[in-house]
Image (cartoon, rainbow, N blue to C red; front, side, top):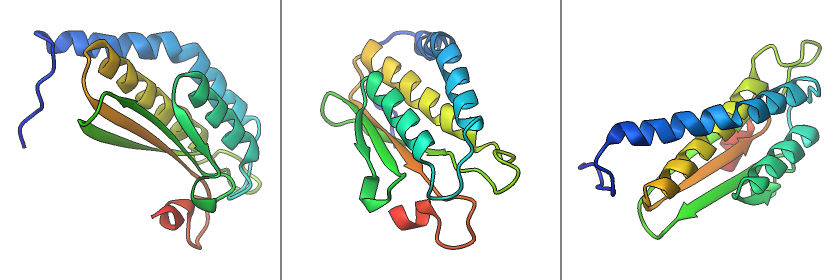
Length: 153
């Protein structure tokens, strides 16, 4: 498939927009990660993480659907620029393990998903590229039973 054209003569400018946005967001993303780490929640009980992540994405211009698909701690955060274009889907995980908290680093996966979504949003806007970014908050990843991602399928 051909790469869609966008109004830019220099791809390095696109990369610098992404890099600059991530640099700008770094303190907020770091705080987000530490807040979730300091409030470990077991699978499908991630209320603090759900509320923290959905508030953060809404405050950064995303349309947020809380309790997505009937899952209490799932969410969908979406940003569209113009009509058409491609869709980038990203997952954020945020549940913890019993007794050992975020040993799997789901707090890191949570903030990295937010960072990617916001950096791509900045690039779409700066270069006037049509497209959509969808961040799914997927709970319950530490279970052996059907996980949040499987239930959201």
